[in-house]
Amino acid sequence: MSYYSREEQETLYNYDPINGTWRAYSTYPPDIKTLLSKADVIRTETDEAGRVVMVDGYLTRSQVRIYG
Image (cartoon, rainbow, N blue to C red; front, side):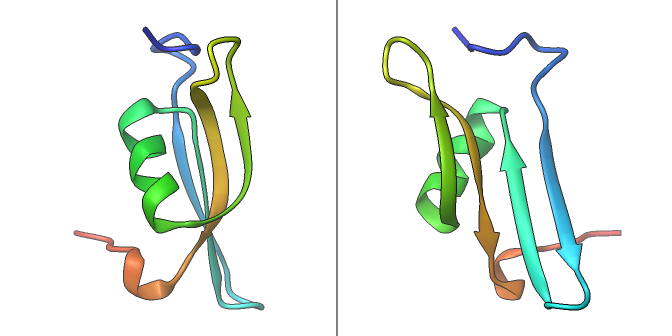
């Protein structure tokens, strides 16, 4: 069971063109798992059971894919 309701779950990717960095934030469980293993994590939030329910971190350009 997720800490956040389905309506509250999200994953955001933000590119800073000045610094050339990608930042990722997620409360969506499948993306949390991926970001924990791939991103340079700077912050997490856990629930009362100790599960990570939010992750915030940085990615390299080679880790981000945008499909059109």
